[in-house]
Length: 397
Ligand code: HEM
Image (cartoon, rainbow, N blue to C red; front, side, top):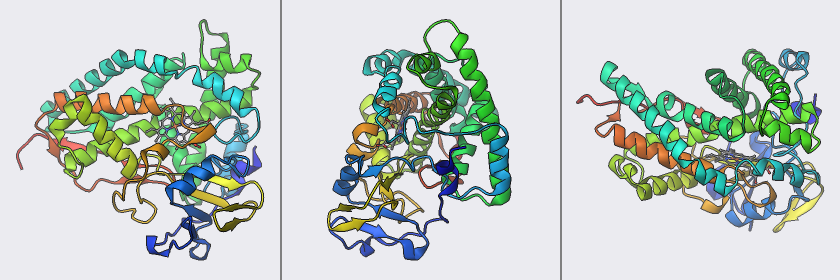
């Protein structure tokens, strides 16, 4: 068990109003309000933190926000669950080499060549949604068009078998809540069982992939010298980050378009330009990954502020979600929404392409729809957010 993974962790952060951010870099010390993070919202300061990895380590990227209690820890320990730092939370010089191996599966050329397949999956999903709408008068676009295609695309790109998709989706959301949410002890135990099942599945997948013909992620990582626990750790992060974040971006974009609060209408989403611009709008106002964390590796400075060793920073990458959890905030710089510097997201191009193509195909297949449920339940975690459902109808009011 990686102790760092399981120990640190605050209570749910309460947040301050923008007016309380006084310093030159607008660093918000919310510790008085039970928030254990220094919230960094100024674009230049966020970029500076991301570009100083020796001072601001990503070592806390996968630390549980809520400390895990005994029963949940034991459920994870029983299956040997461990997340040693390999990629997103790796602050050593092994990061660059491992990142290069993973990046080889998401090169710009590979992603561009995948577009016809992405479109095929999006079109098929949109057709199914249209059938379901005709049949029952309403349909949830999260389950029908947003949830599964990104998972299929990711597994195909990584050379992994496309199977157990429903479980993969459930494990992904459960693990996000376990590590980025505020579950009580009972909920932690449920989520820990789910994470343990995911981990066991992953270990079998790693073993089978090493013997499978052809190129795949785990063979490449093994050739690079990674151990099985390291490959499981990387797989655990990537199989969630590589698809659930895209599902959530698509879900929010569909919802805001259909709600009428996006700077474009439903029919504009049919075109490439319309869909691309509304995806970017959502990325900058309420991305599926609105914040990300860093920890001060030693006593250091950020602008005028002294940052003590061990201080945890919460970087605002998108919108003002930290202060306005009820709705989209002010746009932030597009250049930060996928992070920046040596840990910048490896799936940025893929995620934007998938979101835009899904919107185009869905808007084309379902032209006359409107929202049936205007106040859906939202996933609201420290670093992830999206409506859980986007239910639409084509029936008159
Ligand atoms: C809307 C979708 C997505 C968003 C908003 C998003 C956002 C992010 C953010 C904020 C980071 C942290 C960057 C940093 O620390 O500087 C990150 C890291 C990462 N993302 Fe994404 N991501 C998305 C989709 C994807 C997809 C589709 C993949 C893969 C296919 C992916 C793979 C990764 C990887 C591998 C890292 C870690 C990179 C490293 O540490 O070197 N992401 N992502």
